[in-house]
Length: 261
Image 1 (tube, rainbow, N blue to C red):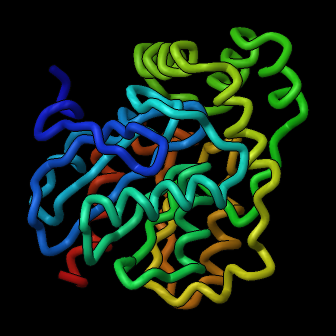
Image 2 (tube, rainbow, N blue to C red; image 1 turned 30 degrees about the vertical axis):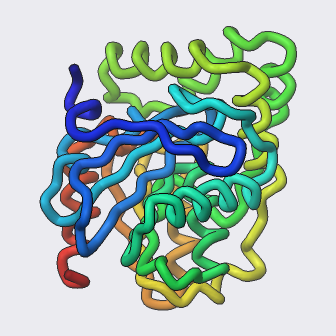
């Protein structure tokens, strides 16, 4: 059993979806809910973060991803509805949402909705607009395996360990090509740049200096427009910065959360 699988694991019914999730501990006064990116699953997060004592940490698989049942979506707003339903079904309060890439788009969407249970946002390798290269959108529909290779080439920084890249590729290939294509369609349709300054919650932005899918300028744009937000740039890391630099990433998240205890 890996670090990410330790702790409490369960399935929960949210509307028509059976969602798989892990939880470090229940009945916590503060909760951190982790939302993965396109075609990925709950293994996108470092074990040290999942086991922190600073919050009850929940990592889950979006519908149609990983161990979760149900259909994937092709609109960010629909994934945001899933997260909203999950939080309500779990009865969580004082929730801090962390989202990577597509997950970050979901977090921004919920940040603008500002439900009572939401306390703060952590935006990882994401932007307020997420245009996708035609080579990826077209390739996922025509040659899935070749396009997964292309995505992995772009997703990891130059210093990423080969075994880490192989593990990420395995997750993509085990998924449904239609779900991954829908995820990237959701990203391509996403655009909140005209409203991002309306977010009024504590916000941490984490960018990788070598991210080729969502370059660091995306993080700068968010920081400059979300009032009071903070940007941490992880040097040498690519799009999968949380796994490429797990220590630095976890420290950045916890340093952000601690003052709000």
